[in-house]
Amino acid sequence: MNSQTAQVEDLQLVTYPSAVNCTDFFIRFTLTEWALRPLQDEATHAAAHFVADVVHRANPREPGFITVRLQVRADHLLVEVEDDQSTQPPAASPRLADLRTGVVARGGRGKVAWCEIPLPNGVSASRVALPRRDGRRSLVQEQIPGDGPVVDPDLAQRVLTGLNRFSHDGS
Image 1 (tube, rainbow, N blue to C red):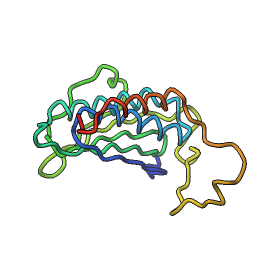
Image 2 (cartoon, helix red, strand yellow):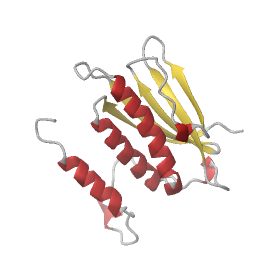
Image 3 (cartoon, rainbow, N blue to C red):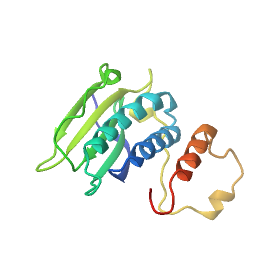
């Protein structure tokens, strides 16, 4: 099996309850961009489970950081949640029981909880249509007519609703 990583995206968050919603948005956006929408529900559940566990155990007076990472590797999507809080493994989730999961302690403090989700039948990392990032977007490219990106209206509404929930003082 080829374990070479074809694409990686990550997001760093503070261990506040809002991290769970931000994780959901990040996973859904990234998998839409990668044309892996069939994996969204499973991936968001796994990541949200890991993030919620870290947030639940975190001290709100001394928040730490969480890094949510997605990787397309060989024949699976790897969902990782890295924290700097505790080495305790996350609580078991019945919905993750059918997936290959694990927890790796980081040297000193924190852990990486991970979950592998199989890619759809007939898809491998080398066949996933991944966006290529340029160093800087070109105004000429943005003016070229053609199909624009597909925006999931439900996701856009959830982002706007989530942003409206928070006041200017951060609560």
